[in-house]
Image 1: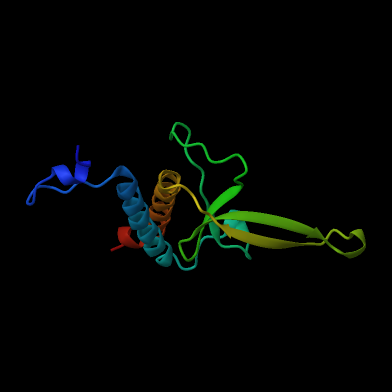
Image 2: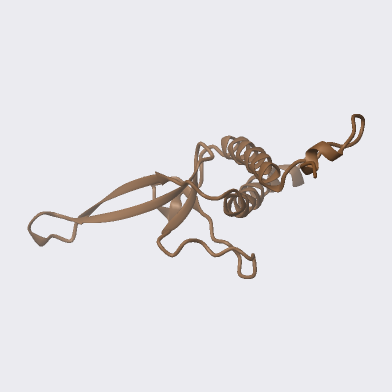
Length: 141
């Protein structure tokens, strides 16, 4: 028996394997996230921090996707990259109350379906922030 793509004759819709379709969808979402992120200047601060610009991405309950247990805080950055954030606090000298922070970002290598889930959340949050910023100006016109 022929593979599914060979069963279609010329002129008919072509068959796209689910894995290819997922990769194409993920790539399209990657471009959308990047484009939306570029529209936000200044980019939102991460939990009010002046030194860190990122938006946390949490998969909603019931999304059907469980992030790997070792995966920490997932964020979208100013350039639209979806990464894992590791925020480390370093105490000041001589046990002072001062502290410094180090942010480490790790590019994620997620399966297409999990990336699609995170990218969908990113698109929703970025669009909401753009609308929030554009809202008052639009109402006055």
